[in-house]
Length: 295
Ligand code: G3P
Ligand code: CA
Image 1 (cartoon, rainbow, N blue to C red):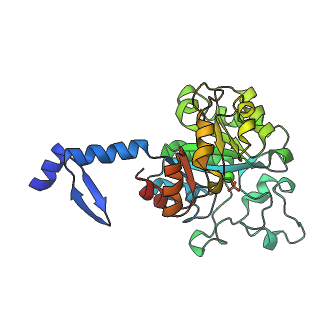
Image 2 (cartoon, rainbow, N blue to C red):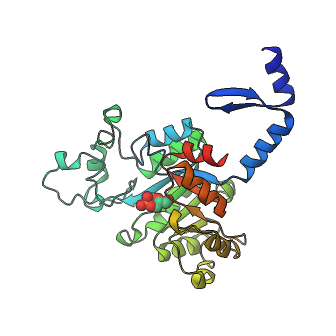
């Protein structure tokens, strides 16, 4: 170790700037740390989906390589009752289902068995580099992020199509150790666009942190505060006044309600929503957001 690096290790840290690095004084390091501590959480949307096919294990790996602690995913159910990780309610856009099963239009997830879905290629649509990537089951996904140590913002996608998916998801989470207090306190949030589904999740397990995707009127926030800990709007709705109104309320876990906004893919919007006071930013390019906000 060079003398300068040895001194840096003892008295400060190395800070990366435009691919270079310089040695920070303890004061600079402390200020950088303060900025990082107060920055919003960055969440890798559908994994790091700007860099790898969304909702796949490769997207999780990419997020991990970028140093992303939080990943978001979408959960749905197959015809024979397996929970799988996918955004659209049909398999058409992100797999080769039309080629393999040309007669099965409109290729709804709920019309295919887990075995059939296992045959699909969920990577080639994104890039040849990901040919052969599979649609993960929730079980495979949980095993993966348990290994990487990442945290999960899990979205129940279109739960109205899948009666009972809240209980089934909670059971699956539980069987992989994701409902112990370590996880419910800091590693798991369950969100949905469907308020009834968020409500059901909360009443089935009141220790789980929940989020509602949308921006209910300020006059409705008190009723949402009974069952959701987060209000998660699109970035255009994440204004300073709206965030202030959300923050003025406590959620069912007894803590200040939070705002995680989506989908922010550029530095300028990231800085705007950070300034407005969001608690989390969900992004396909999470490294861009983290670098812009100092997280
Ligand atoms: O987590 C927020 C975001 O995922 C909601 O929109 O359509 O990407 O699932 P969508
Ligand atoms: Ca989602």
